[in-house]
Length: 290
Image (tube, rainbow, N blue to C red):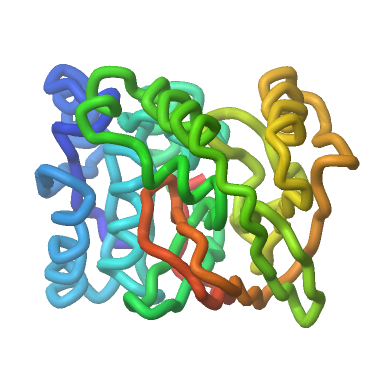
């Protein structure tokens, strides 16, 4: 791991403040890790930024002091290879930080200074619009529609509440259409499919306890009923930290998945387009600070 980290910051991310970034920079300097700071105005700008870093550094060390969307852009800017990545929870939902058990900004900095890493496995989605890597989850159906319906102004003002508002709009204009997915050759008809590479969803809510960032493969939560009441049971159990109701979900395990039809798709909390699509597991994408 190179001792000069690149620090990606996004001033528009949900928990950003100049004071917090100053703390991060000061702590890294005191630990002998003076960072090269790369500010981006949105996740899309992080992609070419990381492509440029990859051209000048064979083994880059990149710290993402932003949200899950910016981390996703970093993945896609780098591609698989000998990079070391770290995340600091300065986004809106901070699902990746929650997955790693990072309790605070200070905790995240301490982990970076300790330098312990693990082999990050990710997913690769291929569809008509191109190909995209993801670290946390891919959602097709209602999940993709809710994320796609989030409005930028509402997200800035309401943070995670913007997703609830989008979900309300989706409930009012309910789409009962089903989709087919094929997981390692097994066919399932469902209303929504959430392909989980990590256990958490939407923050610190544990949707798929068996999922593991450091083991290639996915747990797929398939909502097989197209009625609103099934989703209410899922949401209730998520908030209460209880196991998912068997009557509402069918679980599949796979390393290759086909999403049939034209349902909306989200990756790591950002809308990317519509199906059909193919998802495959990618092992050892990079090293991730634990």
